[in-house]
Amino acid sequence: MLLTLLVMLALLTLYCAILFGLLSIGQIQRPFTSDPSKVCQSCDPWNAPCDPVRLFGNTFYVGTARLSSVLLTSPRGHILLDGGLPQSAALIDCHIRQLGFKTEEVRLIVNSHGHYDPSHTAALV
Image (cartoon, rainbow, N blue to C red; front, side):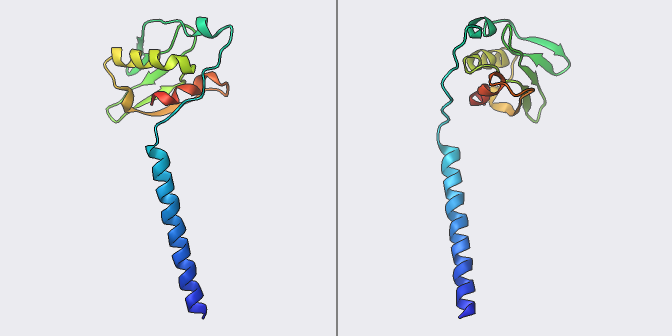
């Protein structure tokens, strides 16, 4: 009786693990939809375009005129420091590509502070 219960418990645990694993795979495969853009009086000036520039070595400024985004590059993938507003994603993507890098190779986005503005470009990656 006890052995039967243990076997049933083990099978139930395995079933749940497989089910949750399949659900998580389904979540990863769904297309990403970002939050709606936040609109504020400062958003347009913050998001004004500027040219990307090498800061030093493998470090590049890829942000907008007033919201910094910095790309650290390496052969094993890139790191983006701060992502700007949702509206900044296309401009940051363009800057990364202008410098000869691929946005798809960004492996990590790091936010330097807790405001809403640096975290929304995760949709970019």
